[in-house]
Length: 315
Image 1 (tube, helix red, strand yellow):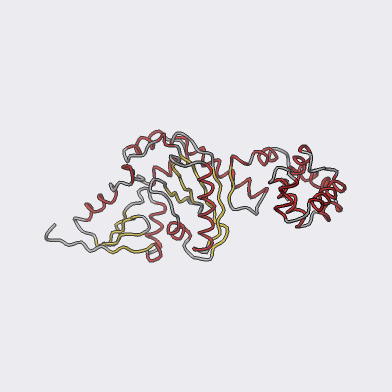
Image 2 (tube, one colour):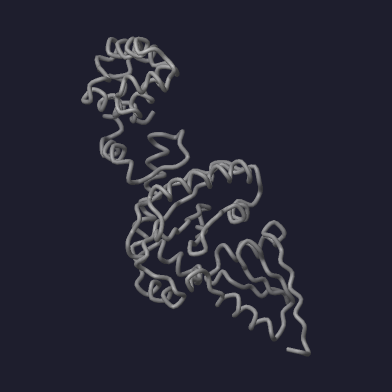
């Protein structure tokens, strides 16, 4: 290689031509692109750019064989995309060649854009995503993004906290508003598709029943999934029968916050009054008012469950 010197520039995703960036999002390889005598290689958050050269293939191979922590490399993105869409023993087998351990446990998190203030969603997402080296980002054709997270050393709570923090970062730092759905972890990589389907379902259900949240967790939507099995006309009739004009008048923003806090504190009067900075008698008065207009005493578990069900009904 003494007679040929390769000059490599590392450029950010913002400076990459749009057609090049689209290739890295949708190509089967997702690693390197040769175009008009130029070579682009995806290297984490940056793109390596150099002139086409007989020795460049060696460099491409070096980047593709680079290992991460514990001998890991994420492997070709097409294999991960295949596993997201359907179960594939062949894809799992190929990923094992890259050091990916199927039994480490895996979880799919789907991110969906609500609105944006910047132009390139995927580029900005990739730039601000503080993902671990063994995780994988999969860009879908519909614009959604799937983050495949390895569960080893992580709990479901860790995944939820990470997702919430990431959405906050994307909104505050990247100027993008996203929501996400989290599927249940699977023990085998071949079952990743199941976690992905659950994450998508969590998003759909969450947007229908509670569109004020940004993170929806499939395992915590048992009530909502139960209600989805009831025909819409029946749900509408139920909601109309409960939320009479009188009931609507007392369910002010302050009253709804009182109810929410009361439920979060497992119907504990003392804890709720302290958290709301109100006298115990004030809280009791509000609960009595709800009982008078709705017939439900939220201090009784059975009535509280019924009230929560009605609150969960979609508009």
